[in-house]
View 1 (cartoon, helix red, strand yellow):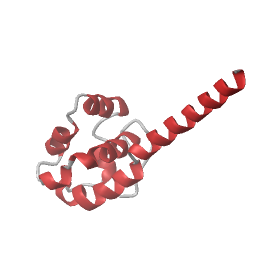
View 2 (view 1 turned 90 degrees about the horizontal axis):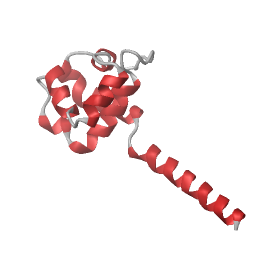
View 3 (view 1 turned 120 degrees about the vertical axis):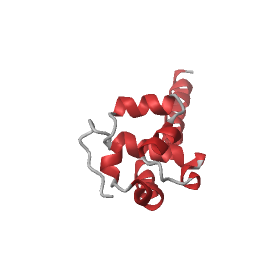
Length: 107
């Protein structure tokens, strides 16, 4: 019985980590930023992501205000660049390259 419980627990852990990794991606967010937001923002990704700390980006995302924050920082952004399906990737990018992260994006 103990062996079955360990196998079940291990399988659950592997599945939960796989699901989390597949949900959003900072690299994809960086590509999306370069393609859809960079020109409208008039700045590179490091400057935009550096507008807030990681905790501030998390608060913005948790409050459901990421789209509004992007519009506030980059008022020329078109709505089609802010589709709901892009928001998790944008968030991961902004969070990973926030002002207190020490990371510098290549875009």
